[in-house]
Length: 145
Length: 363
Image 1 (cartoon, each protein chain N blue to C red):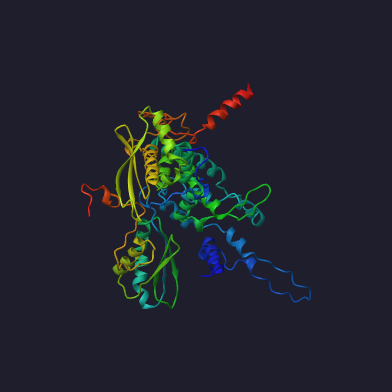
Image 2: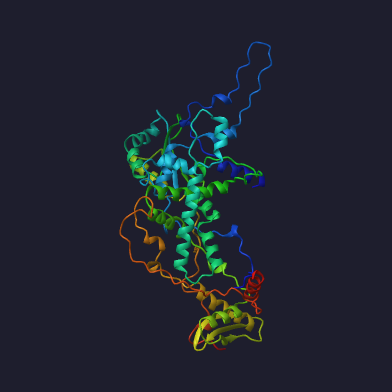
């Protein structure tokens, strides 16, 4: 390698690519906000969930900031905020308490990414193929016309 | 989206999120204009800087605690909220705080922590890269260290951890005494400060594990950092250094020589050993690639991760100064010091001659 480089390396370009989960896993959900009405019957199950199950949920998920807000004369919702600056909203009217638990768990497990329809086989990878791209010149019997 | 809307969205994303439940009164007293008095004197003009007010608010303790747990440091500190609060407060915040809240105690900032953390990260990254790639050229080693723990990476890591809404800082322009303080500078100070906090509260080994988990497990493309001016000559000199036969390139396979898209596969050999292989649409291109491949196979020789021996392992895993601590020290075999890098690639060996001339002048 020559002292006078072929092309200089610019310091601002020097960075690494993330690999969430390889070393440490950073959970993507940062905050859950529950909004409920104090007197409407559609919020009854939500109020039960908040008074009975929310504390255990908060203890099991210390990485999530949980906020409870009273919003009268509206249907109950739960809103999840994620590290990619997106949020997901799920209305909780019509669910039983275990249904609310399932919806909250859905928000806790999500990454916040937009749901993309998988209509075609897609490959998402940061690494090259493991075995390399096939080469007709590197087989035992190369094809002869 | 137009440029103006995009900039507005970016700025809004960077503003701290202040939960209204945490404030004593909203809107704050200073924001409300006083009622005009009945006397006929002119009303005093009021000015309320909304951005300065927003920047002065401290983040929610629940948010800080959640952040500490998110990065796996929930149990590492005795008071996670205070430690994280210090790690996310940049020294540029102090003048703003002093101007608007002079009666409150001065908040702890991450200036010293960031400096200590920067040194620690440099140490861990350098020993990791040197132990993993013993034959890497020096400039590439330095570039790799910058890629692993440099300012761009630190800012990305802070962004991925979700530090943006928790930051306390003040944007300052370029002055004759101080460089400008930008969002990326403030972001990059946070992971460094966190590394220093782990070192102070646990041990050097704990700080090294933190660095390995967040910084050294990331993917850095070393191949793109190794650039050649004349790989054939560099390979010739390198092979001479190792005391082997001079490299000879041989055509291994070819197809379509007289067509529009020929493919030649050339191997470069030292005696009977193949050093490298390259393909190309011309013989010269294939030979160039073969020489490049041979040098890359040498420079990127990698020690398997389970066999990597790091110099900091010789320090015992205990709290406090590494030189005073006592504890078991595992066996350590150092990395071989190698001189495989060829520092000049031109035929006149100008580097060597210049050094001799300078010495003669000094004499």
